[in-house]
Image (cartoon, rainbow, N blue to C red; front, side, top):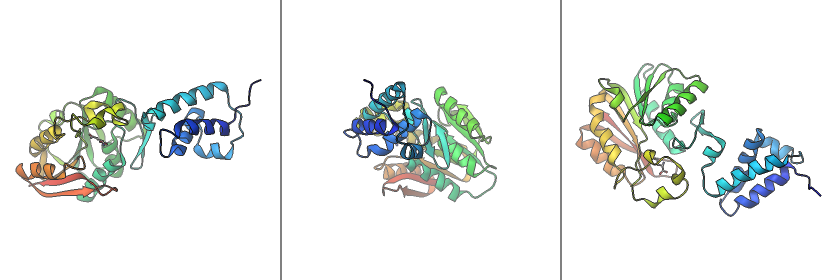
Length: 281
Ligand code: GLN
């Protein structure tokens, strides 16, 4: 005898399997089922009696197992919200985090010009560049990344979102911007210490290590960006860097040593200093 499979039963089964792994399994169980059924979460709740096919159960439980093992939900559904945008993401790019929206917020506050040149170094999925581009259609934004795979994802996001004022350039940090001076430079570079055990645990273990690990003190890439920024910023231009919760003082020192002024760190919603801005000249 085969039992009848319904949406409600599938959801309960997913929840039961996720519960030991996640503190709040409900949302993830629902989003994964909505993804498999290509529907909205609300429909799951309003139509729990709908009949399901066995292959839907197989697909769903496979995703549930991967989520229980710590794989980021964003990779499993291939999407992540950032700012006002829905982005495509995959294992070749870091999953955009809410705290990175602080960089976007500060850039918009620091520069109210309708026309400006900005750069997002190490753009990954394109999150920062595309959020700025959407808010400031008159800005020209250069988004660089060393990873061709990341640039493919970022270009696809720009196309899907019909954002045309971002140019994507392959290369290391400022390398593709030789000879150019910008009003704003933003970056969420790798800043995790190379020996941090967090790199080998979820969620970071599933994300590209080239977007995360940054030498023994986590500052290797930030130092390079700070060192090279003066030759790529206009007088009065701004550099905005995301960094780890314990790195604000080191980043500020680095900026002052290299001649930046108006150095100021900002806290994320959890109260941790997660980004620092500074003015050139
Ligand atoms: N935000 C990531 C973390 O949670 C780090 C991202 C990065 O290194 N840029 O540690």
